[in-house]
Image (cartoon, rainbow, N blue to C red; front, side, top):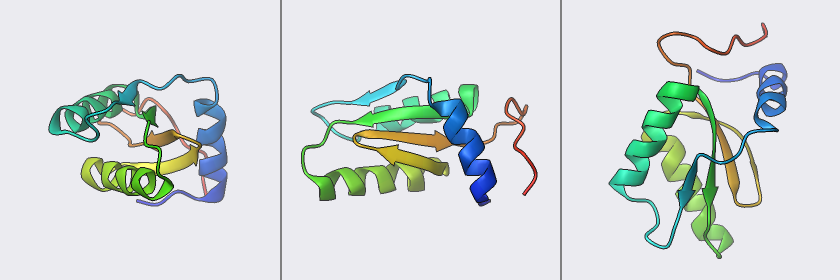
Length: 98
């Protein structure tokens, strides 16, 4: 599944007021953190994750790994915060048509 620009803009607007639900700490990306992100995506569909890595390359690699492992779609990343979207079984967010 891919998002059109119109759908991304819609999701960015919805994500704007959200606070990060998962914070990556000093231990980095662990199985427990991935499980927590997966649970949050199943429940909310649209979440923010804060990646506290100092190095830009490391931060980018962690964000790519989160996207790959969870099967979520990247809505946007600003600074240390990554916004993710993954539709759940019962659709809570209805996306605008392409």
